[in-house]
Image 1 (cartoon, rainbow, N blue to C red):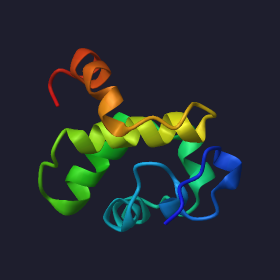
Image 2 (cartoon, helix red, strand yellow):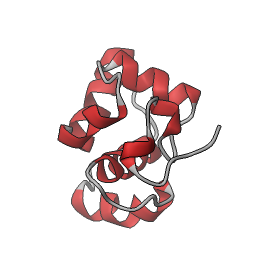
Image 3 (cartoon, rainbow, N blue to C red):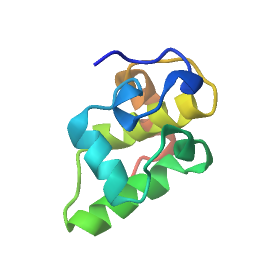
Image 4 (cartoon, one colour):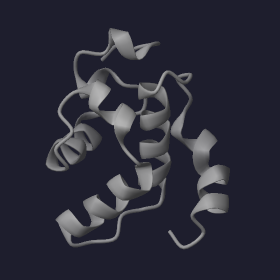
Length: 95
C-alpha cells in the first residue's frame, strides 16, 4: 500500500503512514473511519478507549502510533511511530 505524504492524499486509513490493516481496524472500532477524523482526536484518549473496547492493555507502541497518526492528520510530517516514543515516555509515563 502506498503511504501518503500529506493528509490530503489520504482517502483510506491505510494510506496514513504507520497504519496497516490491523491498526486501521482498531481505529474503525473506535469510530474513526476517515483519515481526517484523526485531526481532532487525542492520542491518549484513543489508546485508553482501545484498551477499554478490547478488554486488554495494548503495547505502549500503539500510543506512539496514535500520536504519529494524529500529528500527521493535523498537518505534521510523516514520521515513523518510534520517533514519538521518547515523547510518550515523558508525557505519559504511566502507560
